[in-house]
Image 1: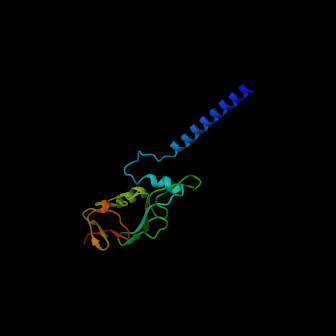
Image 2: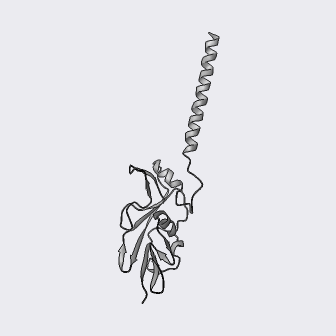
Image 3: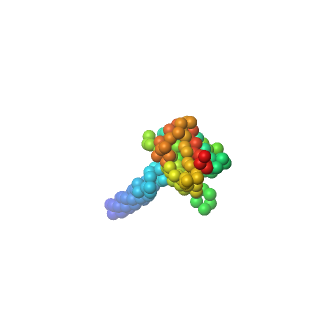
Amino acid sequence: MKIKQNQDLLKGIFLSMVSVMILTSVYYLNIPDETIEDNEYLKSEICYYTLQGIKSDYHYHFQLNITINGERIEIPTNVGFEKDENGETLFLHPIHTYDNSGRVHVETTKNTTAKLGFFFDIWGEEFNNGKVLNHSADDSHMLEMTVNGQNVDTFEETTLEPLLDIEIVYRETD
């Protein structure tokens, strides 16, 4: 009887240790990767938290309008949604769109500074003081940007805040 109790005790200890190892492995495999590409917004911790159903602590919107030679450019629906081959969302970038209205959402789990250039990085498009999308400023074309109606020269370094109205215009010089 004593041998059977010892065997049961050892079996219980062994199974407990295996369970702890499995749970520890699952935990560590689900920690967000801290080695982030060019900027912290490309694959930040909000991507992990959003898919786990945890709400963002900081959520605001800004309006982005881009005009190229007098034509409004549509900002695509679901910029910032990374999907698998079946169309299932793998993760959501903290700066993203839900529709093509130009309304951009910024959702983070902590209060951090987001810049307009981060959105273009996530979108996979170029933007700086001399280029927007595939259009470069040159002798016959210029690039202008306004924030809430005021001309700015910060371009990709523009700090995002709630309710900004950002206009980017590429046009022929006068």
